[in-house]
Length: 372
Ligand code: PEP
Ligand code: MG
Image (cartoon, protein in one colour):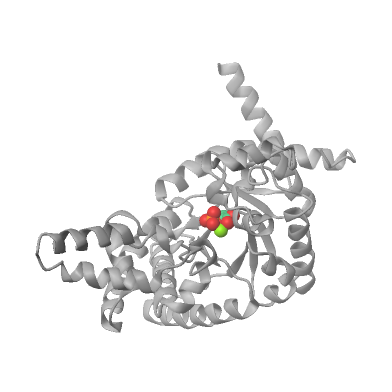
């Protein structure tokens, strides 16, 4: 076993010496970030903040989104702020000195809001017993009904939620800014980057950036230390890829969200890849492998290449990565190398494989055959 371990270590260090793609990891907790770092990740490419709003904090999210009054919403946001600050501090500490890309909240709302049917059943049961239904349940049901969407994945998600819920972006940016300030004052080297999800138009990004600038200036003043974070965007809608040249005016980095980009380019729901029809369809041979696993070069890949070219035409120093599942898929890693990305970001356990493949892709490139 010792020999195998040594051989792997040698292969990895050889790959690291030649590869041009940097490898980061997707991590939402300090533990995952630390593990990713041990596997050789050079930063966090995607910290999904919605995972920080589950469990105990669900109630606060409910209050924030379904708030009957501004005061109620502001209270929920004020309660969330210190919790978020603690989340970010831990991850920045685990990745000290390396970039940590924190993505603003991107929940499909149906995963957060209380279930409509549960509420309706509870209310009906109370009425059947001849009792007055719980007033909170009644309010909640009417709020949930108001927010109902037939297609939550195509609805109030990502930047749209940030623009619609007053104070949400400001709360998250303040938590990031205060975590950075705290780490700076403690002698650390925090490198937080703020990433905006589901952008389809440069104006969405412009609105968020104005808010980021305002809040970070405020945090800097209060903390007595300059807090500055690069702001960038996910490219995960065809429209974002097609207008990448304009979006780059407001973005210091791009990160391809190939999960959503595959879903929206093909029109296949990413949540239904386990459905019977999908595997039956795979058997038809329309696509040899699932486009959700291996990047579809003819469709999604062309959007990626287009966005890279147009983004860099606007801003030659644009940093570009990928943080969808494809970031850890060996075949896709070769594509991203050839497409000229700066990094791939994948789950911590896939980091070593991504490093090896990035090395192989670089070697193939120098040997004159970079397609597989
Ligand atoms: C993506 O869409 O590829 C992505 C990384 O974001 P999420 O999976 O969280 O939607
Ligand atoms: Mg996405």
